[in-house]
Length: 155
Ligand SMILES: [Zn+2]
Image 1: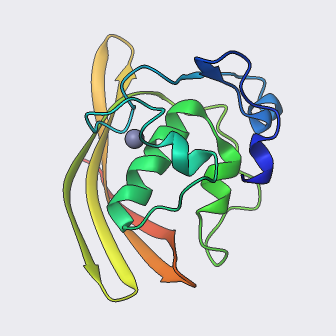
Image 2 (image 1 turned 90 degrees about the horizontal axis):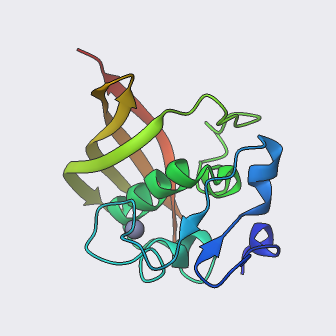
């Protein structure tokens, strides 16, 4: 288990991850509900395995999906742990993070230890739905994938 999940499992169907206390915003992820990442699985059978440290994402797309779910749950520690040290922000503040609604993976590719994921992340913008679109770069080191950086397409 990763060290940030020591205090989780408030109830069997909810987890609260300690680092969320840093921003004071808890958005408990429900084990038996559909995973936020958009795959047809419950959170318990999907990204929870990565967030808890029980499993490691085996592809850039799996890592991307688990990071999206971590943004939904504001799991800053997981985002930091999967962010390459060369580009990781010194302190990740998710307090202004939008209310994410849905992830759409447009394409993904792997070439040896490098990978790319092109996605759209939809969020609530007042009464509207907006999205940010990004081409993200990933790199694999010692068998683990890390988010490197991304190019946002805004239009
Ligand atoms: Zn998932």
